[in-house]
Image 1: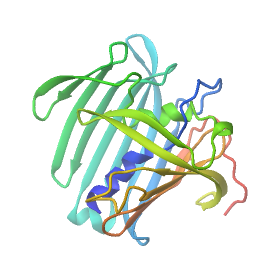
Image 2: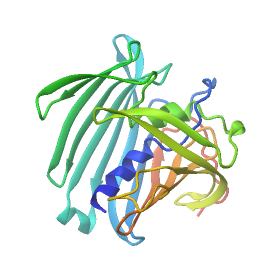
Image 3: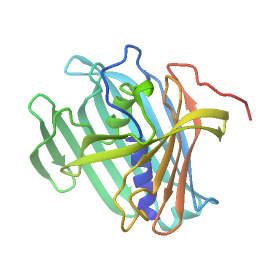
Image 4: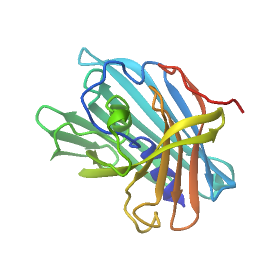
Length: 263
């Protein structure tokens, strides 16, 4: 369960999409902010996570600075304290990452890594600050990181082309490796949220079965069926128990959030 919380938060950052040509109207912008509450096995409060976007510059080019945070709360915090911070600097036009930062402390397990991406030459320059090492790796073209993937796909998702059962694949660079990521589109569903009933798109990401997840299809997630493509909910069946994350606060949306009925 311990690792499951933070794998779940990470997957919020890689949670849906079909990479098509850019659509004219961006799905997000400066000042967007999400907060998620997490619970274990349906009753125990497990933690919180946030995602935020701010405009910045990278080498005189307009960019977005995206920050994702995750931390334990309640009883879980007393026996497994976690404070995670993920950052991505992405180009405002291509939505591809310039830089990725991972600074985590999970029950005493710490990592402090900065990755600079050379998209033109398909390279990743990895600076492991904790181990005091620097290494270069080859990457797939148009490589993404854990955080930038979510925002990249929000701008590339063409709902009209999605078919139930369709699978989407892409590549991310994480922990000094290129990883393939695949998910299946499951259709539409209206779900009850903190804010009311919301029309959503439902997906099934594929994960590695084993120590954390029960099986390859242990995750289910929902995103809003509107121009924002907001991550609304994610459920995970773990090797021990289950984990759920729900959006419980937001601000700075670029488009109207469609709610069918208020709670």
